[in-house]
Amino acid sequence: MCGIMTDIVVLASGGGTDFQSIIDAVESGDIDGNISLLISNNPDPYCLMRARKHDIPYKIIDHRGKSRKEHEKELVEEIGLKDPDLIVLAGYMRILTDDFVDRYYGRMINIHPALLPLFGGPGFYGEHVHKAVLDSGMKVSGCSVHFVTNEVDMGPIIAQRCVSVFHDDTVESLSQRVLAEEHKLLPAVIGAFARGRVHLENGKAWLE
Image (cartoon, rainbow, N blue to C red; front, top):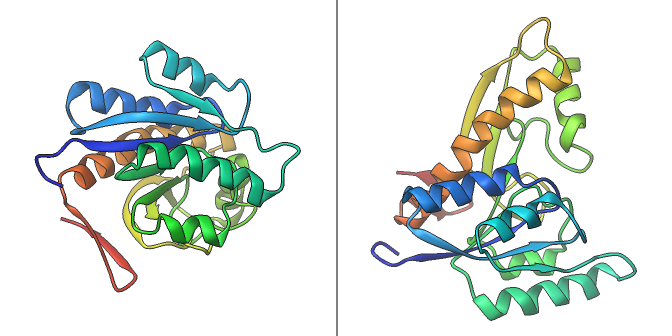
């Protein structure tokens, strides 16, 4: 993939701060790639405003009133028009079916606001993750980027960043520090992927 512009499709559901970190890295040249499409399952999240501001094509594929299979059929059709090298789940708040995950295995990654394999899986999202970390008494938290597999948040881990957990932390204070690291880690991994430095073999991932 080295020397070839990497085509990236991003899926996001909310404010899109992780999406913004990818945009910034593409525009600065840290990612040798192009965001060809943003897809959101929500009709008016702030991530769409970010796409408009940076002239990035976007598509709303609302999941409401549809079966999971029907919704994902629309996703596959839209993604197929781009045939991207990499799909990035950047705060995409939908659990994907096995068929969808299998279709894109090895070229779909996710950012998770905790250290995996701890504090991952169904129910571990947003504030729930940080509350679980604080309740556990852990002294370290962080974020993880991993390849997406059929088991939620349990795919091969590509890279992680850590933050300390302080005795007076709140969910909000911890989440802010973790988010700051997400904004560094996610574009760094995508940049490495674009340079052919991310590898997946025998169910394990590593970063050169």
